Image (cartoon, rainbow, N blue to C red; front, side, top):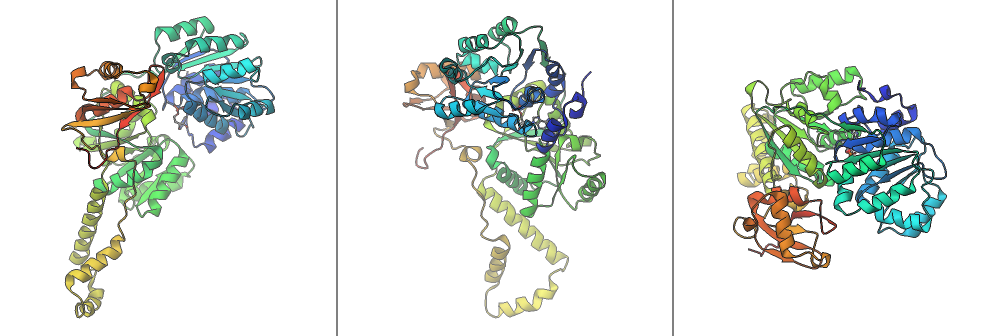
Length: 527
Ligand code: AMP
């Protein structure tokens, strides 16, 4: 049986309180199936990727079972420093009411500082393999008290050549322990590790039955987390949707997004689990009447509601599983009407997007965010339409004498343009990271990609060519010039294949290095 609510797991009020503070309303699918056996102390092999809520899936049981102490009782091994920081942050949020302290340990950060914090007493260590081994050798990290160990993103650690390090570290941890392994894919080497180091492991993965997506136009935008609100307003301005449902992961995010939209003058409302029933009814009434045309919601709050058919569904945060995606976008395009579903994707979430596409057997094409000019034009058209309405409804008559006065001094054009400039202000449109907006062409039909790998990594043009061709499944002859520099390189690819290449290669490991790929920033003069 699976539990639907966090309290059904029987976890402490302290942890429940943290989850509520974090704005989580309900466990994600992977959490529903992984948390109960993990709380029982069973070994877990979980197939899940970033975006599914996997961190809390192992984090909640770890924090629930721990307390503040002197030596670490839990240990999480991760492939990269970014992930170490992220995971430690999430664990600290879950553990805030219990005072459980999680610390990231990774290369590149001062080892003295890490030694100092380990000495002071840490409960959960989240580390990358190289630095962890360094600490073990220095005897500054004692793993004898570890009761739970997690291998997170195991396939990535394998790709990065950490398999021997993992084995070395596991041998340092008492055998009498709980082991959890999470991985997006399950290659044979990972299964081997699982068989060798885990006992009677419970396999968990979210069962995603075949699903059919309705006829809805689906696109995604690549947006950095910090640009999302600006991206949202651009889309709202240009698309001018009639009724929009914006989905966020957490209650906090719902409050944040709806609050910002309201401040900027949008007619937006929010619903999530913290609101009373009567407040929710009131908001829904406004949405149905059109007093507000944007409703920002969590999945849980939206689920139980009779929401009218909307013209746009915007996934401000990517859904945590393909089912969630289908549910969300099913709020538009009902009864044969056309609907539009837009999804914001951060670079790290590409794989989650591809999983959704594959499982939901749908196509989500990449779209370009509206440019500043398009936003300005859209705002101007909106004002013109409003002026026409005012004149048609004769709402302006009391100002006619004032206009007569002005006519004695200025031309009609000057007066109208001055009034427009007052209404539209200086019409500033905020900047957004360029690659999300513009995709300049480099050679005719080609775009240039920037890759964070270069000569110093001992990579050759041929290696890059082969990797791209194999990973993105495109013939090598379609790939244009490759320019190698010491620490980075530029690769020309046909514009229509650029996204495919980025999603296939970004975050991949080449020659033992994780490679980031993005659209190159073009100099205006290059042709
Ligand atoms: P992860 O897959 O662990 O990287 O998590 C993806 C995102 O989902 C993170 O921002 C988490 O904070 C968030 N998240 C995890 N569990 C939940 C939940 N039960 N409800 C809402 N958001 C969640």
